[in-house]
Length: 251
Length: 227
Image (cartoon, rainbow over all chains, first blue to last red; front, top):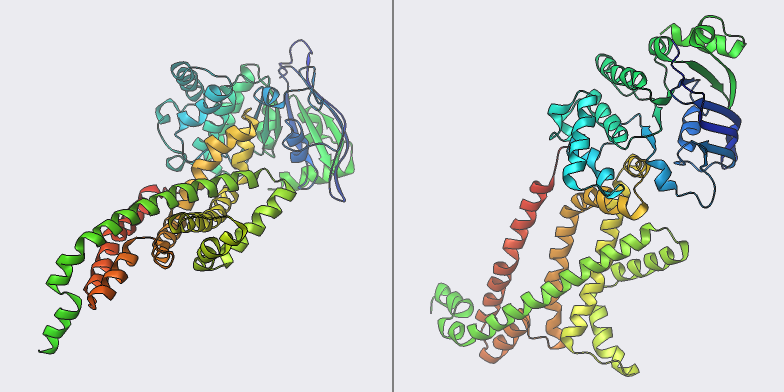
């Protein structure tokens, strides 16, 4: 299944480099993601996939290269990074909900303080976003009262409420108990069907096969190979891809 | 006179108590006034320093750490005496009240800066990242996400430290601040009887025991289940 729309490039990464001290984590990465595309990034730990994702909203400052989101140069001096970030949704492995706020408080904070929406409007938007992730009845619950899967869905609602142009998922299900993974993946599937552009770092192979337009395999700071999921999982061209795919399919 | 009567006569002498109770009450209110000024200024200054420190400007941070360590290492009485007896030599004069207030305010600021700073550091990096990723700025993240969590963490140690330092108002007695202990020792030397000291001790209990109990209550009130 492919749902890519008009071919408008939503994310364009060119020759991206990132070093931590002497350690070069990204060694020149090129990646384009078009509107409504769902791209999966896989690779062994330390391959740079999370760093790539985190550079795409400048949670990490790249050492070199360029990143454009919806045609705007993310690294340019005169780019308002806060204005860009609210259009780049980010979902973290560890959810990172604000523990001192309810689910609704978590979702409304940026609506009120960044978009300056009045309380009533922000709460209406938050209610809708929480309904989309199936948690309309949990809006007054604190994070500590929610399961991991519910927390991650609130985190998705928090990003979704800002109407992002693209959503970045950094291992969204790897901190979850197996029985809670499905709920999060269902939400991501709904988002895809609603036309969201998504970049997902994850090893959920079944989900990738069913939902991804493209799978990117990274190793040692470079993109080794990319293509449709059936190609990457069934007939990878590179030895390293083959080894990695057979390794994770064994589990 | 039996031992018991001698004990009562020395520590709870009705005549002495009646004579000096008014001055102890005056000292009591002056102590409250001084303590409140120390707590307000000390904690506000400590928080301000911690916020400045969070901006991570190297030169400024070295300066903050230097003064904070200095103030934490010196006995508060030494600072009071330097301010009161030392500074007049370079034509800076202050009353005993101001010297005591300023010294204890600086000491409380130093300790509370460390406590607030530890609280800010204890908030997970992911909280900053989540907030910044939704477009909130640095100061907004600090104000709405990090500080509310940091301050909850700081309340128990801050309460303890604040109580310890405000009890230091008793040090003002050596630089002629007419607070509880000063009134009590003056009365004790005039009367030749220890009852005013007992009154002073009772005044301290009336003042600080509720604060200690309140601190315990705040501690449980602000604890919330960690995720």
